[in-house]
Image (cartoon, rainbow over all chains, first blue to last red; front, side, top):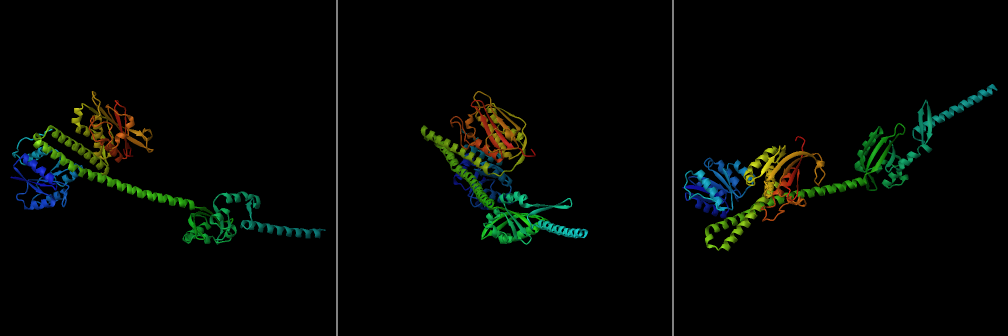
Length: 140
Length: 427
């Protein structure tokens, strides 16, 4: 089972994310952390480490940038792809997270279908040959 | 007879010698300034002008020229004053004459005055000092000139600076008040901008949730709802979408106002071409032609300029004329500030003018300023979608570049947007 870690303080977003993943595939397990600090304590305990980290930026205690910095500093976690999952569409946030080593920027959307499409694309590119529930198309 | 004549001659010679000596004494006295007269040496003889007539003009001048004037001996005793000076210090003529000038000078100015006075004994000196008479302080400008060799005195012209100083103080007060106001304005501006940014960012969140959960309900349980309920849900989603678009646009606008201004020399032609290719899909869809004439290389904020072109092109595409293929022409040129037909502060030097001209529906010229204002729309929402922020962003971007933007149009005859940017030396 492939594990992915979502670091987000927003309970609604955690629910939306979980539902989206569960409607895309049952071959991926989701772990949730409420802030960067909690995520780091998860990372230390998890073996194997999660295959992908989805990271919100605006969080209490330890925000996304600080957390990304810590992940990139650690030899064991350095190679984990980190995808920024944020409402921000600020180019400066994008640039900063790229500089800190984020692999992709996924903007939070109000379109559930679009989220599912984006997540299937991401999962397919990270887990080649992964079984999905089907081709997801956007309903207008 | 001869003897008598000789005695008489001797007597007359003695008489003449005495008169000569007297004359010489008189001339010396005139020269020393002890007698009011001029003695001028010319052609080996002295010519004496009594001042009864000659000095009249000068005395009147000195009295009437509106500044204080005194004549001071090397020891600092005032031997002459005009009435203007007496009025200035509020003392009668008799009290001023014969007094020490140093008694009229404020203790803090004494050192400066002494230095100036010593300098003036052999030349000239000017400066500002304070007088003090009966605890009344009078700021003055003094101009000292040695009257040697004709007189062993120093002439001083004294100008009252009280009014000037008072005005200066008032101006200074206004200046300080203005500086404080400016600072407050800057502060509240930046507070407002960061408030707008934070507010719009946080406002977006609940809306996004409304949209996404409404969508989920429709997705999962649409079959359980009546047609009316489904319609209501769709309306809720539509409204929250519109509000989200508004907030995103507002966020963009506030970001343009707060972001740092980093100018980079950029080819506007390249930026415009890039925007054109980014908007390719929209352009194809509208069957539009975009002609970009050579544009200059200018120091701009590239991302902002790209947004500026993008917003203006999208504006022209949006307000295209039905049944006519849109043609948008972008060109540039240099103009003299004086030739810019734009009301506002007077400008000088040269300006770059970047023109975006379309053949769309145009607009009534009376709305030329309104279209650049935040949330101002000339058309109903049902006619044209939009937030009313696009052109406000354009205006803000041009202002960030110390320039200004104007629009001219006619209903049905297209619109012309002109961007004016001050030309710098190296451009």
